[in-house]
Image 1 (tube, helix red, strand yellow):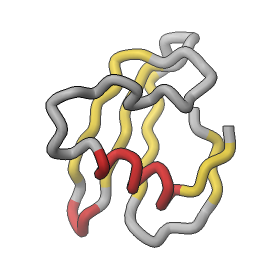
Image 2 (cartoon, helix red, strand yellow; image 1 turned 30 degrees about the horizontal axis):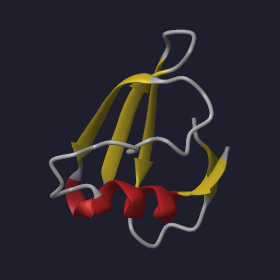
Image 3 (tube, one colour; image 1 turned 120 degrees about the vertical axis):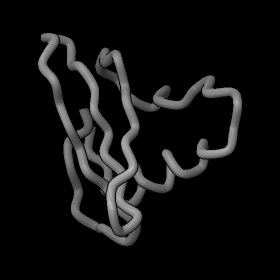
Image 4 (tube, one colour; image 1 turned 180 degrees about the horizontal axis):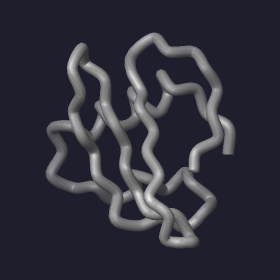
Length: 72
């Protein structure tokens, strides 16, 4: 799935103060598990997860980043 880094960042930030994470990654069409969100310096966020082959994947995103990436 193609998504801009800034869109993924905004989606994650929209759940920041919520207690209910239903649908958090519902837009993803591939099975992933063990999702971790890590805050980085300068307001960036790292998404760490295991893909369907149990490989550790990392994606760093930040506000205003227009690069389009494959996620997951």
